[in-house]
Amino acid sequence: MKKIFRKYLPDAHGVRASRLGRAFGPWLQHPSLWHLNRRSVSGGVAIGLFAGLVPGPFQMLTALLLAVPLRKNVAVALLTTLYTNPVTIVPLYLVAFAYGRLLLGESSGMASAPAFEMDWTDWAGSAWALWDWMLALGKPLALGIFALAVTLALLGYVAVQLAWRVHVTLAWRRRGKMRGRPR
Image 1 (spheres, helix red, strand yellow):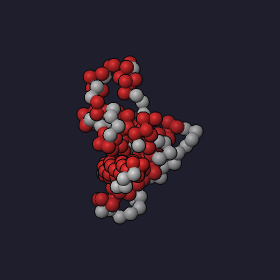
Image 2: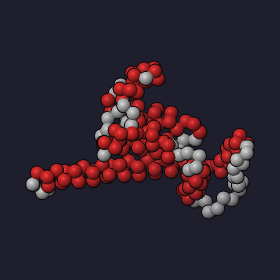
Image 3: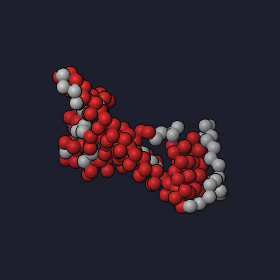
């Protein structure tokens, strides 16, 4: 499991030595921010899943601001936010809206929300139309985004904890068989 993470994550010393890393040096020095262990990685995944639903370009900043004081793996938290992108964000917000309506006890359907249509020739106009569409969704969307972020964070945390545990258990059994002592 660690080999997979080490292959794709940046080196802690390289990050600390970079210009930006030196600027934030004291905050990025704690070893837990870079260790690949079950608690740090599962916490980083949870933080990344939560921060991924933060609107706008503040997802990675939110992940960083949560990972550092909570002492979870920064690189994992930042990379996990990438599950939201221009292709996935609208479906995720639709799920969040439905989740918010469910939690508020409102009937199904979009009710008074205007339809959003992307105009590929006018990116700026489409961005404003998306913003207006999200504002029209109001309270169910706001509650739904928060509830979905918390739900995804909890599910991600539990999934990584379980996957890590299964991986370690299988590795122990494999080593035991190699030594001639089944476990």
